[in-house]
Image (cartoon, rainbow, N blue to C red; front, side):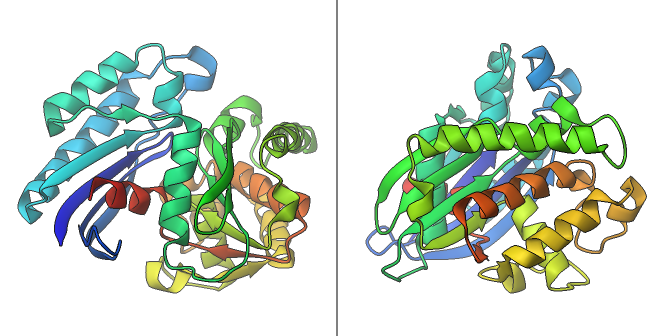
Amino acid sequence: MTRVAGIDCGTNSIRLLVADVDPATGDLVELDRRMKVVRLGQGVDKTGRLAPEALERTFAACREYAEVIRGLGAERLRFVATSASRDAENRHEFVNGVVEILGVEPEVITGDQEAEFSFIGATGELHGSEKYLVFDLGGGSTEFVLGNKTVEAARSVDIGCVRLTERHVRHDPPTAEEVEAIRADVRAALDLAAETVPIDTAEVLVGLAGTVTTVAGIVHGHTEYDSAKIHHARISAEQIAEVTDRLLASTHDERAAIPVMHPGRVDVIIAGTLVLREIVERVGAHEVVVSEHDILDGIALSVA
């Protein structure tokens, strides 16, 4: 077994996984998995730059993660950065800060690479013969990957809970016009994704990331976030629609009071659930299989 560490730095959150991996079998034993909402992508859609306060929040998380990695004695580390740092003019500031703290340069991967890592991580434990459509609903982008043992088609599109919230939402709860603007963006992005990925051929829909896991926690009435209970939970199209309608009518304080709601998701969860609902309706899926294993697990496996 090889002890490795993987870091996934997205638009909304930065996550760490330290694990022992068998390179021959791909088996992974998790030692530490943690997440912080740092909102690296704050304002990027509007300004094209990473904000100083967003960079400092991210660097603070990196310093914490460096201590964990050293303490557990990981032999190798891979740091992958996704949507926000792809888009930013000043991403060199981000790269230099990470190198100084962690000693490795972040790999600003393409959307297609992001999609492949997500697929590997999400489907590693699924051994059916069905065709899976894995979607990773992030803060700045959403990746779609179709396949079974291998990736058949993948596409990343620029719809995410942070990007759409910043672009369209000015009221709490959002107005009907703001909601329709979000939906229009999502539908256009799904048209774009479908040019590359035949999403309507999927037999099993697998959903990743914080919006999907939060909706699963709400659906199943969890009083606190429990990764083990959420992993491989199933949520029906009807349940997703019900949660979306509930959140659309809620205020910030009402959303914050939901037991499984992370504080960093309170203001972006509505846009996230609208994306989720549109995906399910477009695919025509009856349900979504929720996975806690995603791009982070794919990164860790790739290190080994």
